[in-house]
Length: 292
Image (cartoon, rainbow, N blue to C red; front, side):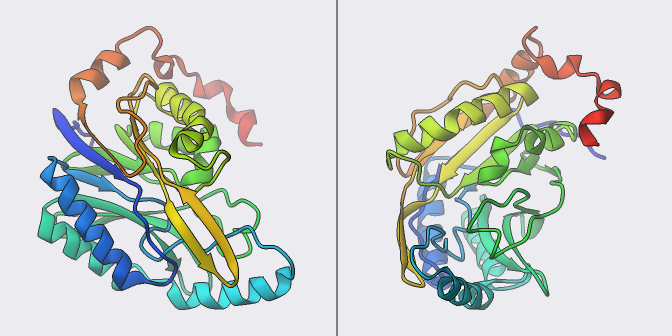
């Protein structure tokens, strides 16, 4: 396994884009415009939210759940994409036009099942795909839980992804930490109360703090934004974007639409040199019972 090192400085943008279910071409157009804006601010890497390219299907149904589920499943299969389909091709085109690495979410058609998948493209190729592992209620009826996440060795550094609810499970980011991750992308689609960017960060911030500090990684996080409706069910997302350091402290203000900042490898090394960097004190030989 090749190991880094991370570039001395990597400028990243976390973008809470407003996309709609099944409107893939229009969604990609919005993402192109947003990526251009981020690159104009120096971004090398752009993160979009969970399911941003195919659009998020609302998951808070009321009334007749059976009818809702049938409509949602039919629609989900229709909008889902293979990894060589319209979404990945569109993201590759965005990356080629702007010169940035781009990471975005999609419903993935894996043949006989669907996954909630995030991809990373750049330098003319697909670097990896990550499937959401832990699926909450009203999502588990639509897509399956994915496999253990990988870390990819890119020209920017070693990058891995945890999708939304995965972040609340400590093992999700630890699986990346033990693969020498340096930058972890955290795409969300969540609407905790109060439905504001600050409300989202009040909910997600504590776990982002913990995951980044306990693994000594940079975190790049953004949340879905805007009103969506599908199969008669509406849902409204507040947006939110933030960058987090390897000590768990926010590196940027919580923004509604876009957070841009530079991740400094010297900062990573400084934090990994502190006494509080507990990762180096781990005793995996003691932990076998945790997997029983």
